Amino acid sequence: MAAPLSLPAERQVPIRGQRIHVREWPGEKRPFLLVHGLASNCMTWEATARRLHEAGHRVVSIDQRGHGLSSKPDTGYSFADVTDDLRDLIGHLQMRSPIVAGQSWGGNVVLEYAARFPFGPAGVVLVDGGFIDLQSGGNGSWEQIAERLKPPALAGTPRAVMLQRMRQYHADWSDEGIEHQMANFETLPDGTVRSWLTLDRHMQILRSLWEQRPHELYPRVQAPTLVLPAENGPDERWARKRDEVAAAEGGMPNARVRWFEKTDHDIHVQRPAELADVLLDAVYDGFFPA
Image (cartoon, rainbow, N blue to C red; front, side, top):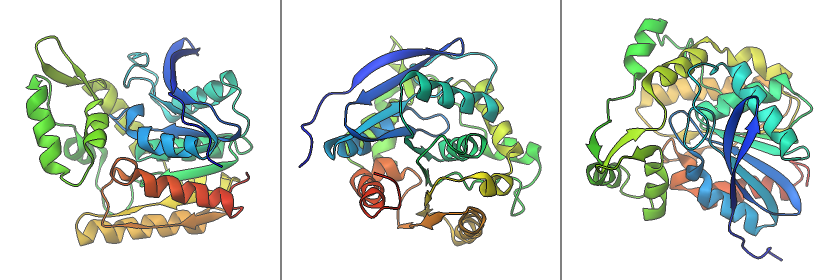
């Protein structure tokens, strides 16, 4: 029987001289820790978290450092830093062997965490991320990557204009999902928005992502791993993604791949119920420990 729904507790957790903002749903079953992507925020996991909670699981979603309502130090955005954050946060919250899920860059964070602390997670979930390798497939030099992936200057955009753009670009997303994506931005008193993650910190993270070599981490991941890529974008990019996903599946001791066809990069926002059900099925069929 499903557990009764509860509103999440919201708090700032002090770790490593920083404060990490978390949203937490109670539950008696195996805990899930949900990690967002670059320039995103914990609210993007909201609908997925509720469904996991409804099934009786304890669920925690977080704002990583520099993002959302968490501390924003000027430095400290290497994978060692952010995975130490996860380790200490899990210990502070007394989460016993959680299933750790990350989306996009958050997937690469979770991959690094599972490789550095192989007996920490009971399961790993890589949601259209974790296999991102910016040095593979002819992506170019760091300078080319930095120019191509530098975020647009959105500061000063009226919130109403940004909201309209979101709705036009993601016409098949729910209103709730759009609002959760809008939480990537701080709304200023004059009604304009700016990203919670500053450009300098964004580029520090991007540089760390460019330097990471996922194929070197795959053999060190001991926990069963779900790799959940989205089929989207031009055919050339999809072909490169298939190669990256195949490398992840072949490189980890115990990996399972499930493609989300005709789905945006933000699987957890566009199709949260289906994503949650895939995670729950992995518990029910014994791939993840209950």
